[in-house]
Amino acid sequence: MTRTGRWLPAAAAALALLATAACGGGGSRAEQQAGAPPVTDQPVQLAVTWWGGPARAELTQKVLDLYTQKHPNVTFTTQWQGYSGYYDKVNTTAAGRNAADIIQIDNRVLREYANKGLIADLGPWVGGTLKTDGIDPKLMGTGEVDNALYAVPLASNTMSFVVDKTVVEPLGLLPPETGWASWEEFGTWAEQVTKATGGAPWAARDESANISVFEPWLRQNGKELYDGQKPGFTVEDVTKWFEMWAGFRATGAASPAEVAQPSNGGDISKNTVLTKQTAVTFNYDNQLTELTKGTDHELVLVPLPGPGKGAYARPSQFFTAYAHGDNVGTAVDVINFFANDPEAGAILGTERGLPPNQQVRDVISPSFDDQLKYVLAFDERVVGQAGNTPPVPAQGDSQVGRLLAASAENAGFGRQSPADAAAEFVAQVTGELERAAS
Image 1: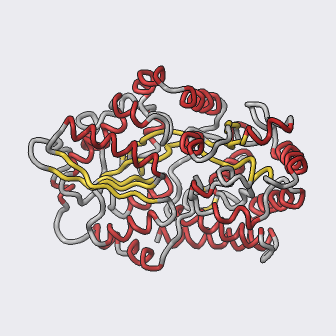
Image 2: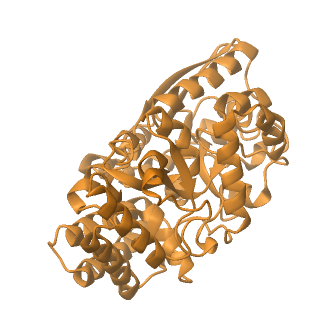
Image 3: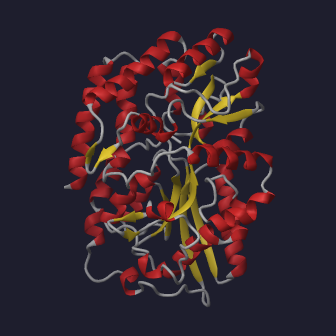
C-alpha cells in the first residue's frame, strides 16, 4: 500500500501539541498502571481505530466480537477509514487527549509517536499479559524504539507486483513466478505488453511516486531509506529513479502520470489493476485477498524486479496502546489476543499479512484456502531471499512518502526535470527530518 497520507494544516498543528499533551501535569493513568493486569471483571469499553478497506473492517470486528464473547464485560467502539488522512485523525484526537485506546500504526510513525509519548511502553506487560516468545525476535524488534517495546506486529508481509493473469497470459507474456532479474528486463517485458494491448490496458502503473517501491530499489543499490536521522540517498540516486520511470513512460512500459495519480494516495479501490487501466501494479502480498474481491480477473504475484535483497519481511501494521488510556492493561490483552490467539488468527487469515506468531501460523495454515496458501508460499519464497529488516524509520518519515509523491508527480507531468525534482525532494526530506527531530 502506498503510504502518502495527506497532511492537513490543522492536523500538523495538532501533532505539534502532542509533546505538550504528553508532558501535561501529573502522571498519566498508563504510568500508574504500568504492568497492571487486564480489567475483565467489570464493564470496560475500549475504542479501536485502524485504516483499511471493508474486508479488514469485517475481519477485525469478528475478532473483537470473539474477544467480547470470551470476556463479556469488555466491549468496543470502532472507527476505520482509508489510509489517506488516517494519521491526521489520530494526531487530532491525541492532541485533544481522547485518542482511541488501541491504535493501528505502521512503522512510518512509530519513532515519532513513541518519542512524543503518544503510545505506551509495553515492556512492563511482556511475559505476563503480553506474550512475545512465539514471534520472530527480528519481527518483534521492529516494534522497538531505543530498546523499548511500543508496538506489536499484527502481521508480516513483503513487497510484490500483482499481475493480471487474465490479460497477459493470452499474450504469451505471463512472467515466471520468480519475476524479472532486473528493472531493465521488467521494462522490456512491460513495453511488449503495452504494444500487444495497444495501451488498453497499459502494462504497468507508473510507480515513481510510491515510496514502498522506491525503498526496495534503493536497497538493491546498496542504500537504505535513512541513515539515522538523515536521508540514506542522494540527489543522484533519486534522479536515476525518476529517469528510470520517465524512460518507462516514454516506451509505454509504464502508464502516463495522469493514469497513476488517482491511486497515489493509497486507496486500494483505485488500484489500476482493479480499474483495469494496467496489467501490473505494486502491492504487498497480503493484499491479494482484497484485490481479488474487486475484480473478475485472475491475479498472480511476482517479486519486484531485481535482486531479492531489496525485499524484507516487514510488519504490515502494528497495534499500539494509547499512553493515556484508562485501561491500558486491558488494551494490551486485546493486542495480545490479536497477535497470539489461534482462533483470532484463523479469522484474520492473511488480510493484514501472515500471522506474526509462527505457532499460530502453523496451526491455522492447513485450513487456509488455496489463495491464502498461495500467498503464504509466495511470502516464504521471497523472504527466504530477502535482505535484513531495516531499522525503525527516522522521525518524520510519515511525511517522506507525501514529499516523494509530490516530486514524482512534478517530474511525471513535466513540471520539473527529473534532476530538479530530485534535488527539491532531497532538500525537502532533509529539512523535514531535521524539523521532526528538533
